[in-house]
Amino acid sequence: MKKKRYLLKFPPQSGDKALSYHLVKDYDIRINILKAEVRLGKTGSLVLELAGTSDNLKKGISWLKDNQVSCEPLDKQIQWNQSRCIHCGNCTAVCFSGALTMDQNWELNFNSDKCIVCELCVPACPLNLFEIDFR
Image 1 (cartoon, rainbow, N blue to C red):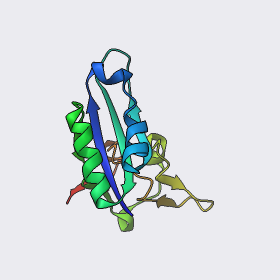
Image 2 (tube, helix red, strand yellow; image 1 turned 180 degrees about the vertical axis):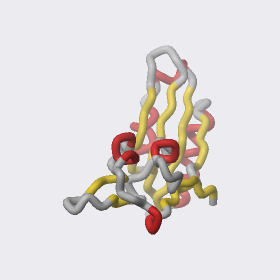
Image 3 (cartoon, one colour; image 1 turned 90 degrees about the vertical axis):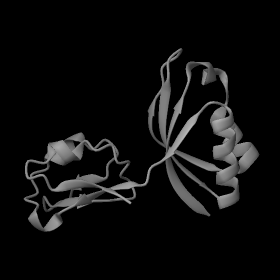
């Protein structure tokens, strides 16, 4: 089972289509919605983590593209310079995914599996300890 994150952008006319249903039913792809911005009658976007076989992921992405959905793989990650961190917690205030948290000892923790690379932590850090790693 392979996991991959994508940014999906879809046109207003796709609002009546059961896109996620077809990915699950027809292509056996598990979906984890990491971020969604959907407005009725307007262009929408989703950040999804898709899990399935490589072949099914390829077929599912192809099906989405055939239905006028733009699919961009998210091949970037946030890098954190932990050694210079003063654990002020500014970044935790903007991290809605829960990737950045403070523990009981007021130490900052970064869980990269929860990070959706929204990049809000980058400007929030007063020491500029976060950067985007494009792989």
